[in-house]
Image (cartoon, rainbow, N blue to C red):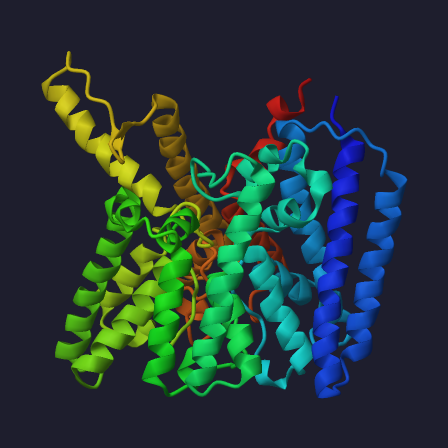
Length: 483
């Protein structure tokens, strides 16, 4: 039997947590003495009250949890957090459309970064802070956060960790899942604080530095400025953000190893080698084309702009310092292809993930060898270990389903009257949790003109992309509901 009472208990407790975090944005609104303070307090009160009532009703629910409960909790909590997280935007009138408010909020929680706002600077500081904070919460994952701070969820918590943590195999740092979550968040908080300090030293205001650190480490890309990072005419700030975007797109367990002094583990990791190689290789190509076509002013700017955009896109952060659609068509194709790569497994990035691409390429290569030597046993090896056929099958199925969803979703967008560039760009950026796309939703534009149905549809793509497709699709399978 499905333990629905425990699911409601978890959702109630997490809703209380969301309400508590809203008080932080209320504090910012009070600090700047702006009009949005009561709306944050009202929104927080609604979350804490409803969540508290639900949690108190089901507090004695049995704590046993299986895979079905784990997948349901993970999917529902992203929806619940988005449905309640939109309240400060909606009831304050900053985003008067409920559809737009939901789109902006789920784009934040899923760390997609696509926006409908045409004048971001017009928002008060409290709402700007909340907009950045929801990305930071969504970055490492609401469920990982809950495992770290809610002991009640330590019971059977691995099911939720498996359902939420990106990548084909969650790499635990510690045998106890609660300790793993705490250590992941410890690294996450440390990097956020260090980046904020470095941004302040580069001339950003403390408020902007904190907000941008939130959205950098979450690979979310929300900025406090309409022009994104292009607003800041500072090479130093861009290099700082390149470094921390790269860190956020790497496996956080490797960051933990590096902090412990185990650098060889990082250097020898095949996914990290591929991640670094792709970033360096693509950046060199883009920089060369920018320099020789006059797309940038000099060698340094060519290198900086290429590094920034390549890292921003491959990590699915989505910050912009330039409109890559104005570059040579060849570079636009490279940027588009990078949208499908994504960050490393165990990072805050979206997309297919580098490890899956590495395993796909290896399996394809070994399949050719098997054709020549049909009797040979040639296992796929990753980090000097043989990879089970089940993982290979999972990776192949994921990539096939991913591309099928992209293709079908493009048809849906084209039925709304959008051309190939816009349809493909909107779909790829939504399911990859990137932010800017192509065509009418490129880095110099946003999603404001997309019709209501399109925004709800793209919101669904953001959700399944953030939860790595299988988590959400399983719920719609009849096998999931069989006892």
